[in-house]
Structures are given as structure tokens and as C-alpha cells.
Image 1 (cartoon, rainbow, N blue to C red):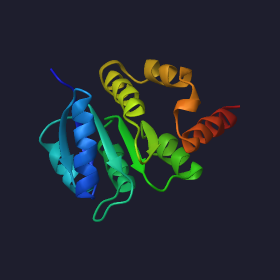
Image 2 (tube, rainbow, N blue to C red):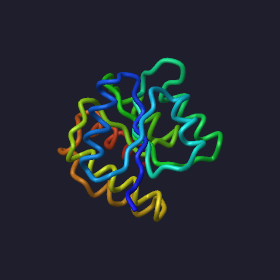
Image 3 (cartoon, rainbow, N blue to C red):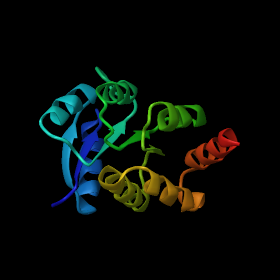
Image 4 (cartoon, rainbow, N blue to C red):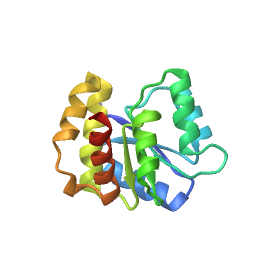
Length: 157
């Protein structure tokens, strides 16, 4: 059975493009235009992972993450944004329990790796996935994500 990925983005062109990329990676894809619509889709059944834009009308990515946490929904969620910052990334990944943070435009090879790890975490638990992500070389990630990794290591010390 194919893993099910929910793509959430208010821009219809970006949503369709991202859904197409995810589908080409071998996943079953459903889409939503904002966090509120995403919650409605999640009420119909679970998904393996969520890819959500940060800035959206009605319910943005932050509100979606907060509502998922309030409901106890631990679906791995990757936050996508065209406006990346180190402080936001640390907040989303650590405080709001996002699985990861990516700047747009998304590179398909990086997305493939993240989705594989996110789906694995949904199946197996989070610890082995985080170990796997930690072992990846940050030169494959955007500069913002590399800074997040460095800042997270600094905070752990």
C-alpha cells in the first residue's frame, strides 16, 4: 500500500506542482488549500505525512501544527516556506514538533529523503529517523537548515 501524503498550500499552482512531485516519488497524494481544509481531510482518515506551507489564509501552518499537537496527532509534518529564518525553523522543529523545515523551492531529492524518513517515523517511531537525519551531510540542505542544525547542536550542549 502506498504511503499517503497530504500537501497543504494556498497557492493552487504551487500545491499542484508539489503534489505532482510527491506523486512522482511514488506516494498517494491528497491536497488542501489551508490548515482548516487539511484538518477536514485528516478527519476522514490518517495520512503518513503532511507537507504544509507556512503562510496561508484562514489557518496557517503554525496554527495547523498547534491544532495537531492539541489533538495528540503526531503525524510527521514538514513545514515549507519561501520566507525562511533560523528562529522560525528552530521554533517549528523543536517547539511545535514539526518533523522538518524546508525553504521553497523544494529540491525533489531532498524531499524524497525527508518523506522516506517521515513515513518511516510514522511506522517505526521517531528515534531511528532522527539518528538518520543527523547522519546526513548538511551541504545537501539549504543554508537555513544547516544553521538550524548548528543551532540545535549548540542548544544541546
